[in-house]
Image: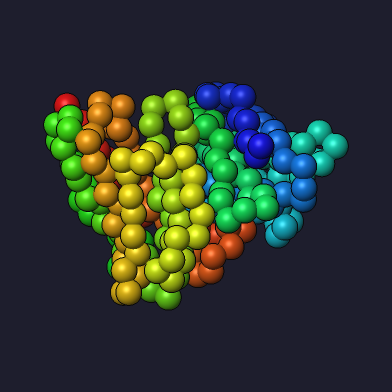
Length: 108
Length: 114
């Protein structure tokens, strides 16, 4: 079965601290993985996808097939990064499977 | 606004009733996806339509049904409502049927069943 696990419901850091939001997936094939973000009073939107191998707003995520992980990282958190972050997996179907999300709080 | 639109924003109804949620995709997008977000549940995929045809099905209850019309807008029908159906219902759209494409989300409809 395809599954996405985000073990942390809430992650709190201070501004300038490094951030790592964890995402583990369960899928036997080659996955497509995404991070979506929802800022306060805004719509859910794509942050980045692993096939693009890009850095968006200072965030990066590397697919580790050995550990079946796709953790989201940023070296120096900013207050405007406070949001709900969802990891998502696209496997061999047309479904996008989302994790339960992690709320990131960045304190000044 | 050429983004995904959803109506109504809020809906309050009683158990046993039936409601219809409406979604208009972005201009040019052929796929529409429906998701349910309950407390502590994250986004649960319900169903996908592509160009009027059902494309993929998730954990959608038999009491729920959806359709996509020729103008590509979609409706999600929820019947025999139960308290547990209270949730945020999101619609998303994308240009193609492939889930690896970026999905563009609407603002959601908050359903409260009393």
